[in-house]
Image 1 (cartoon, rainbow, N blue to C red):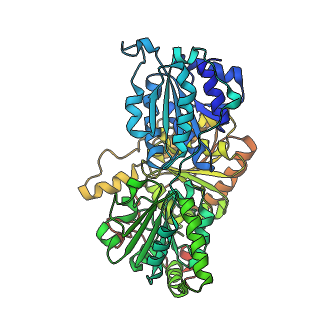
Image 2 (image 1 turned 30 degrees about the horizontal axis):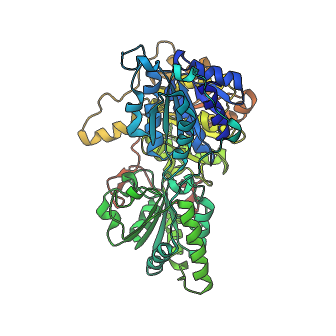
Image 3 (image 1 turned 90 degrees about the vertical axis):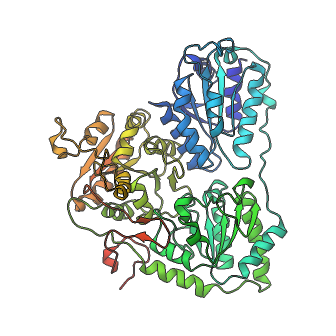
Length: 589
């Protein structure tokens, strides 16, 4: 068979069923192999960066998934770089396959010949241009081994066109994936960590994205319940413990955090971090975050231990392997009567959770964004999968929405590339076509890659996209307050074709409809909930993405600060349950 056919067969053997990409001259032999051999579904993206983010969403949606994106030579590979960065930053395995000029032309500045392997190398676990056809099977085998082993991450394989076309001997029937390597905690390590926990009075567990990547959310909850220790999920770990669980202490950080979460962290004297990076938007000022607390850090990547600050004790381990052992040893200690009673500490965390809320129930027009998230809580329930990337919309969503299951908050956490949300949501909806997928964007994020909506229309990928529109680069505008300027951040203009948008610029409803989707515009707070309910039914009826555009007030400053002890609240806080009717435990009366 051709080397390209061998690659296709290996993809199937490794569990791949779906690819996202764009054909082109240098990758056409691979597409020919897909057509000839069959067995793989392909979604045609409108932009190669979009294909890479679709692959990301596909991977993030379900444990064991590895999204694959395909493009031709030259700019297709460079377009994938943002997807590789996003995947690498969040420990997400995706496989990027690119076409390339013939081997003999690689040094001759051939048309669309670029050293994509060199460009991609810093952002991948492996980036390689395969020069010998017989190396194709081994390269793909190694790619899947690396993507799944240790800290997960992306790989790029670059295939010259003559390498794809060459015939090789390959026995697909005897092919087997390579064993996956994961470091595993030892019993003495876990025992020492639990000794430190037992010696504390006010312990917390910080659950990072590694818990979700390892498919270990149930074990995390089991450990929390055994020990009685409250859990702080990070933004990437959100959903690892349900928001309404009595041991969920809320999120901590400078932006995507809860008032009660920050208050609880400041009271804690011990922190067990599992599968987290101590990201700066979580910790803020390190002196405030660490002062007076003992830290144990568990991470699958050895070089993550001590990267941000030196913990009191570090354990290199896959989160699932570590949690299995933590649960085993904790249960033994519970049966021996060794675990302290944490009810008083857990109750104090719950008391903060019942009272420290932000107001959402605003009835004014133009609409305040807080009202949007209040109605999203009402409309979408506990089973929704949210997808978002960056901006005031994402920050406030993390402050006000609720998530109850792992992989039900899907977010480009570290890279935060604008434009990520539309293609990522399409990848999520492809991976889980039976779930309600709801994307959330500000207007600028939406405008970056809104052409990918046509993919949803063409391939019948329904989801709901909540678009909050203030015709501003809102997060950048807010950060410019420190420079006393409002410069180059306005997206407003008088649209000569759509006077009904009242100076808000782009007519997103017309754009969405022109791309084959459905769209609803909302200008009154009382219209939000009916519009969201209608969007759900339209998505199912027409099997296309449905955009709900909510026209917001132009300027809203969202709660944030430089320290978890110094978050500025720009809006009124909740004084009664009526001020935040969809907040958990909003029994303020």
